[in-house]
Length: 107
Image 1 (tube, rainbow, N blue to C red):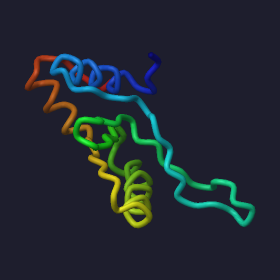
Image 2: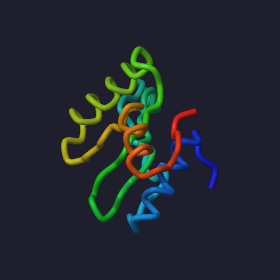
Image 3: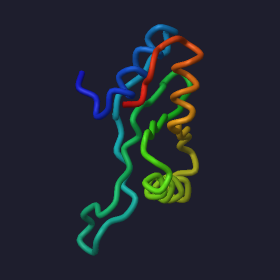
């Protein structure tokens, strides 16, 4: 399965090693549309963990670039408060890698 970033593949491997079922980018949430109803903004979380009813968004971007993702998460929370999303940041990914002996997950 092609992942957008090597860190996503490594996180999927971690889920697999612990028997955590996951789906990769299964849902795109439309956040805004134009006058004709065409999507102008959308958010596709990286993973869905069906056993936890939880979406996981992995970001290895530097902090200034994360702001756009935060805006999208806030928009999703306003539109769909029933949808649970956990954002994993670069530091979270590195901690997981160190804890589970995975080497660097972030390129």
